[in-house]
Every structure is written in C-alpha cells, then in structure tokens.
Length: 85
Image 1 (cartoon, rainbow, N blue to C red):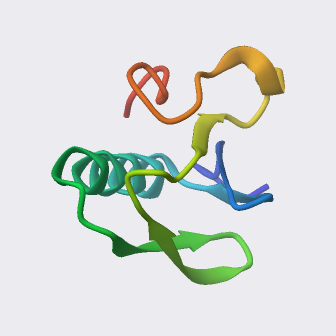
Image 2 (cartoon, one colour):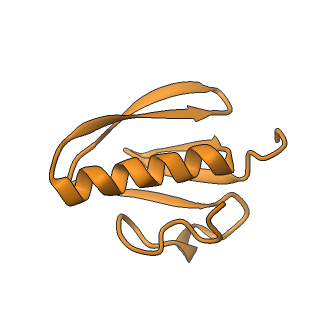
Image 3 (cartoon, rainbow, N blue to C red):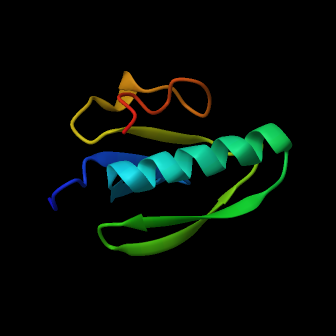
C-alpha cells in the first residue's frame, strides 16, 4: 500500500483504494450531486489509475477506512467518511 492510500471507495460493485484527499473530494462532490439532484461525473484517482464515476441522486456508495469491516460505514448519506482528513 502506498503511503496515505488508506481509504476504500465502493461504487457500482467496485472498490477503489485511494488517499485521504481523494476520498474527501469524492465524498464532497458525491454529496453535492445528491443534494442538488444533478448527475455528475466525479474524478476518482486511486492506486490503479483514474476513474470517472457517475454519481446521481440514486447512486449507492460507501467511503470507509481501508482496514475497517465492510459494514462499519453507512451507505450514501451522513457519516460516510469516518475520521475525515
């Protein structure tokens, strides 16, 4: 694991290992898309490259620390990013 790559972003059946900064950016942009009801492509830089992730008000995602159990975070909503950077 690269230094600082301690977050998992789960979306669309895939998991992406990413940094504190990218997890926070993804979460902020995803929440904004949900609040406004606008679909948007969110850039997500992760350990294996870069993805454009489509986020809509119906999207389901999770953002959690890499070494937490999978059920320790809440899906799409408040409190998803624990221990925000």
